[in-house]
Length: 193
Image 1 (cartoon, rainbow, N blue to C red):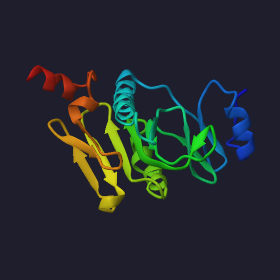
Image 2: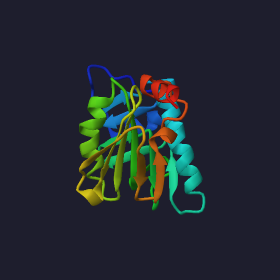
Image 3: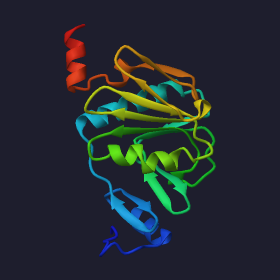
Image 4: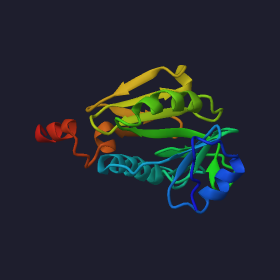
């Protein structure tokens, strides 16, 4: 049964785990507080699926493994997050979470953009194993990538560009990442093809 928070009561990590293992709803755990995860839009799920599919196909003969949105990421001793996707190459952790991603992918929406580009970004770039943080907008076509090798400088990609994921040596076009997404930018792009 999920944990019911009353007046933002703090819970222990153990209480979080006991509840999360049986809950039908996913929750993030941040400094003793639990936050329910909302469902995703079709565009969000399509983008996440496209990335996972491409990563999975590319990494079939690699020790690296892609994960979707159901595996937790422990970013610190008191924070567990659900990413929209990640790649892990050296995972000796727990069955239910990882701490060693090389790539993290978040698909942004109006309700998550501020958190994904703010507090989560700061958590993620402090993970020692992380090499790339990828933020993909769902409502319009733009992809932001920050790489450790470039000092976490933001690089922006749009239609007509290719994105190179250097930590797994994979290049995808922006069009591949947004395949079958029906936002205004993609509809206009497809109309002009």
